[in-house]
Length: 235
Ligand SMILES: Nc1ncnc2c1ncn2[C@@H]1O[C@H](COP(=O)(O)OP(=O)(O)OP(=O)(O)O)[C@@H](O)[C@H]1O
Ligand SMILES: [Mg+2]
Image (cartoon, rainbow, N blue to C red; front, side, top):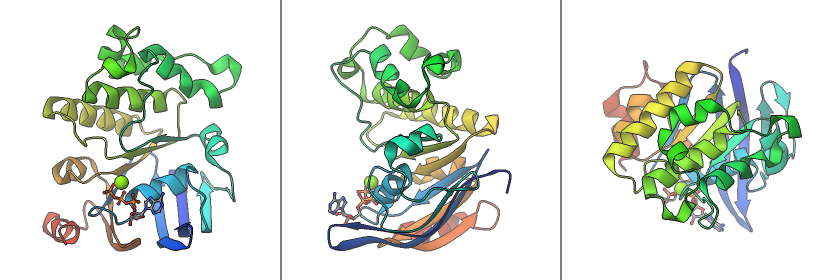
């Protein structure tokens, strides 16, 4: 129970009249990476949006570190330690790196509004480019900025949506190293949505495979074989 950061049960989500998520159960624990996998359009992003409050949940239970959450939306969840790095990064191109990081302050009390030094230990390139506009960074640097902006809030639960999408291999490695460092730190639960199989497989402690908005397969790294996981995500 102690390590449990997130527990959702029977989560459902609709876009207008169409139901996209059908009763998802998911647990994420501190010091672990929980990978959500599945082909295009199965509902991975919708699941992260529901957890982040970026789209309203239509049903199910949601507990964060043991507390019942009810209908709390994005801002309230961010204040309670949920940080969301959306697919496609969504950094602000006309703001500097520093200003992008400072947008993460909105959910922090005034006294806590500083960028922790550890963020620049994780992403030295961002320190070098503090005055540069977000839009002038490479795709990989923008992804690092998006993750750093999420970390500014010192989250208990970090949600990452396809952080390797469209990123060159050397930066993918750096991002993998950062996720591994955060995992080792043991304070944060990480939910990683990822279609790059080897990346997800090398980092994941637990795996969930979605198909048409429902869970098709789940297991932890010790109990689920690589072959079974590949088969589940390949159809
Ligand atoms: N805002 C929206 N309004 C209506 N339907 C949507 C909306 N966003 C997503 N959908 C639909 O919901 C389903 C799940 O989409 P979602 O983006 O969650 O999938 P995904 O697994 O993240 O896909 P991808 O791998 O392409 O990122 C898809 O059929 C998609 O077309
Ligand atoms: Mg998606």
